[in-house]
Length: 493
Ligand SMILES: Nc1nc2c(ncn2[C@@H]2O[C@H](COP(=O)(O)OP(=O)(O)O)[C@@H](O)[C@H]2O)c(=O)[nH]1
Ligand SMILES: [Mg+2]
Image 1 (cartoon, protein in one colour):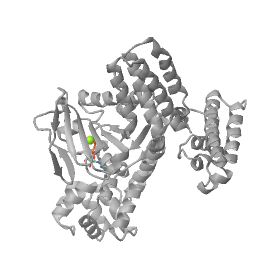
Image 2 (image 1 turned 30 degrees about the horizontal axis):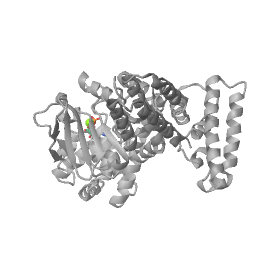
Image 3 (image 1 turned 90 degrees about the horizontal axis):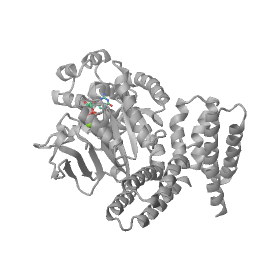
Image 4 (image 1 turned 90 degrees about the vertical axis):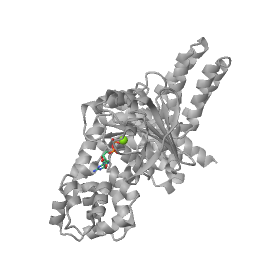
């Protein structure tokens, strides 16, 4: 299998390095940090412009309102969310001191009180929280990249693409509301670094606040989906991320934390004539101050805050379409929010490739140790790292998955879809790559893999195939060989 191979290579180089640096405690300490990093959960950073919905999306993924979404000082600081047995929030100051940060609950979410400190005094905030989702993944919330403050943008850049040291994150979810030049430029900088200088590894694009794209219509989500799809295609064509998905993070978060009184209020609201509702929902202010609506002012305020005008419209559409109890409303809202699709994409692109992504980061970390502590004996190791980053099969698959959409190829649409699947775009298991039912893998898997090897090799050799397509087909043939080897071993056992 490819995944453990990259990790095994990393460990082999690390063992060599330990040997070379055995009399250099500082270098050994850096190697230990690298080893430790490989043991940790995958680190996913959430990045994008200010108010793109980063913190809200992070909350939706974790299923709890732990990332502050208000405009206080703490949202200008890079914040790490890790799993911990008990809640604990600390600020790492630039002067090296650590401060315990008081946590306040506000509007059902958290806010962190930095006291006298300003964002420029703080290097980062560390949050330990007993949320199950955090035991597999550490999330890093970043301040906006296109905010007015250069300093705040610079911090996100320093985390993801530091001048010294390795990237703080193994993978990135990047949120867009439009295809802004500054976003494209920023993402290009990230992908150069995260991808080791040769294309992005581990970047997913999200078209965020997708509900708002369906402005002003009661069936907003349908229009939003159409608009989001078009935008998603444009985003994928930039080749800056492996894939892109439209998401309404606010709706996903509210659905995951829906309260009974909100369900009751929405049901009352669904009895109002559509034209009256449409008028009331023209703005948040109108809605909150409309005393004719059959819910009290507090309830109206809560609905607007938690759902937004678009979210309320969508919830009402779900209720009218037949959601009769709160759990079916939750399911419907989650489905419409797109969060399930994003979670699946995260699993396919990050979760199933966790070793590869971590090995990639680990190799970059080792490379930096070698340049910080030069020694003749590390020269061949530096060469090997360069070879691994360029040639490791899993890394090649990831880079190709990002590049395929933005590069013209001599393949039909159907062949391109098959090629992407073989490279693991739908999942890295045999059934997903070979496009067969999971129960059929044991029976016909090996034969199917063999046929795929032949198919992609033949395509690569075909005289009308251009060089890029040929190289891509050879990578797919390698993927099929790996599948074949795996399945044949399984049969032999
Ligand atoms: N309509 C809508 N609003 C959203 C969505 N996600 C976030 N918001 C709102 O956008 C604003 C900024 O959200 P926040 O998560 O703090 O953005 P950040 O600056 O990128 O972290 C808040 O008022 C959120 O309620 C969404 O999916 N749909
Ligand atoms: Mg934020």
